[in-house]
Length: 454
Ligand code: SF4
Ligand code: SF4
Image (tube, rainbow, N blue to C red):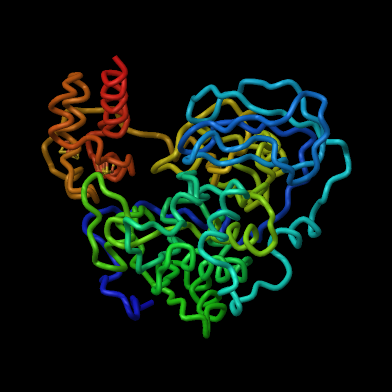
């Protein structure tokens, strides 16, 4: 498919990056299914970027579906709402897949829940207008997003009201909706684009109103022709453009996306708003439409359970707080050759073993890799081939950063701009010596953060 970015300056791609096997075939054709509502949910108070939220409920209290159970703990924070009707239990501490121990509100179901097609209809169904949205003023839109506890559903989990608000200090002219889903294996955004085009288009128009952007583009890689088709039809007459981008990893990362579409370079340490752009994921923007038009909070999200190690890979609509183990059971369990479970995909995800951990607002998928997937050769010495540099979309020198981290030389690591690394994994993917570049870089960042606390 030819690259088309009508009305934008970008070339449809960015410099560097890699082409890992896409592995979308496991779940790409699987329509979103609603998982039976869990008997109990765990809602971590810290499942977003920013301050943890604060519980406003007490044990034994009854809560209705969608009722707020924790309010934001500051401006950069997001409220939590009950994804099931039930009774509040004693607070617990849970371990998230990233290894973080966090306090969580537990809710036990009281039995009567909205299920199956009714729940799907409640969340994505009905009419999604594209006209008459001028009646929602920007502040009203931001407030609705705030009250609904919406965070970035692409995995970043950054509170959306902070991004989608009018800002005197930033003149935002462009709103990009990120439908790239460049991470291998994951397909939940793809299915959202096919099955929830209505709320995505309405949400895109509302988000653009919130930030004052006149240019709107839904950005999709050229390996997703069906999603491109569906959204082109749905966007007809709205002024929204569909930007078809070259398939390359990490095309879905904000800075690379902005370069590919607008040809604008976000400065090192800067934000998209510094170059007049706001970016939101397709799932996030569908939640925005629901919050603004219907006053409904974020209680459920689409999650891919995928990979060669799971018996029946699927895309699921899941209550936030559902134990991940229940999703594996729903998908038929592990195959005999399952070897590693990753929260997210293999490039940016985290391997984990605590399957009682809950789905959070940032859980876009769980990938179950097989023994063949994880078989790797022994680490050898750096052969100075430069392939890590070729792959790095941030123009860093990963081998030098990793060596400085290994030597605990945090000054040198900072000179090499370690903090600009967003851990995309392109360098490690390219490295023929099997050097764990990303782990070393993460360790170096940890040392820097620890030194700042002293
Ligand atoms: S150094 Fe960081 S940003 Fe660059 S390729 Fe490696 S992980 Fe990605
Ligand atoms: S890709 Fe690996 S072997 Fe090649 S220079 Fe980078 S760290 Fe060294």
